[in-house]
Amino acid sequence: VCAPTGAGKTNVAMLTVVAHLRDKGIIENEDDPYAAYAHIGTENNGQGGGGTGVTVSQAGRKIVYIAPMKALAQEVVEKFSSKLKALNIVVKELTGDMQLTRAEADRADILVTTPEKWDVVTRKGGDGSLSQTCGLLIIDEVHLLADERGAVIESL
Image (cartoon, rainbow, N blue to C red):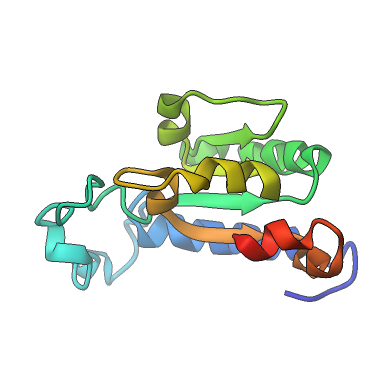
């Protein structure tokens, strides 16, 4: 989304987040007439993780929001936490200042991080890695690709 400051880009991201949470069954809408068919087309139709070390329920369920600076990451955590509190969605900050244990990161539905921290965290791949559980990646201020830190964003 390309729009001027204050136009509501974060709100568009929030709508995308809620749609992802709904699609993954993390939040439910009982009024949805198609809810009974939600399992159709899911990986292995609920038969397990296919040897990846990640269960189907974990695969692609986590949301990662990459903010360009720690200060903006803190703002996003506060905003998303307050808006999604009623849905019991766990939003955690993962930056140089805020370290998380693996269990805390796994419990979070949404991780808000910086490009440098996500780069470090995802360099060690393998079965069950955080990058394997990521189903939605939102990059805020993507135009910073032309900046001196752009190479880190590009590598993601």
